[in-house]
Length: 400
Image 1 (cartoon, helix red, strand yellow):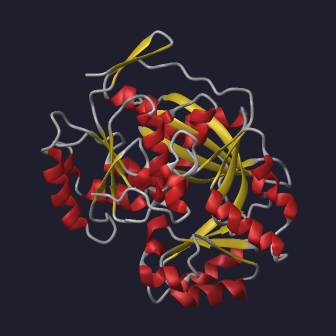
Image 2 (tube, rainbow, N blue to C red):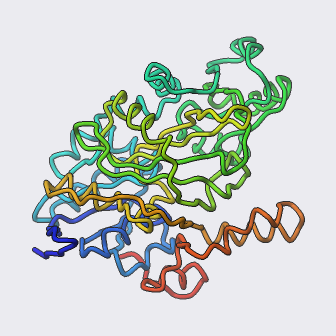
């Protein structure tokens, strides 16, 4: 048993953690916990992932939760026998969440599953059900219609265009065939009803279920984040807020840069939503502030760690530590977000954005976030250089 003292609180570090994936999210978890002396074993199906080389984790090659579920279940059964006590199992992707929920009965005797019941998680990940619960809790949600076939398209005449088309469950469009059909995008903005019909025809023969919502106008900085950890009583134990600065594709894609700053009006509605959901675990709640009237609209909730979660630790709120203390029965360490602003940047994606600026496809003004005085990179860390070397194509440490 190893002990670490922080501000008078003792942290017991004898319970190991298993992280499912070593990309931005998994690497951030490993650093958040490894810096505290907690043993982190990370599973990867990507031998070239930069996170494999981090000094804060022990990397193990493993089947993927998306493509090889039966093999992964057997692998985890054998892995559990290597530990003296049940390790904490942390998902990093929606596919990991679905895998754990599908096999929860088999996994729970061997691993600590640190999030809410399968029913609650399904309510969070199903956009219709989430918005229904949010609306009842008094939150604003975009007007929308869920399509199940082309005959439902007529209902869209009640919406104002432009609209955004996206899957009911985010994982739907990650299937290889439909992922290509939707242009490898998480969501598609459509300007007119006719454009939507064309887009829907491209993928509906593969999976006809999709959600269409009215577009909420606003810049990248209108996309605002409430990151938190809730205990089993559904109360928020720690949280931080941030806003997006860069995404690719713009406004509908993956976050390249986030800026942490205090956004007090997110807290009350987020606590109310999480309570209404009976939520337990890590959550990233994304809102968009309407440029027309300043109102906040709920966009989505991720019921797990997400790519930029390490930004919280940079401003004093280590959600991974809060989760670890809670699920291992240890005293909570009070965490309050620091006043200073700080940024998280994905360096490889940011370099791609700079290339787009050089080609005149993006505005240079949007690249200023890379000049921020206080920033942390998704891969580069002066105390943990091997992931960056691996990203640059230099020899790293291969998973065993």
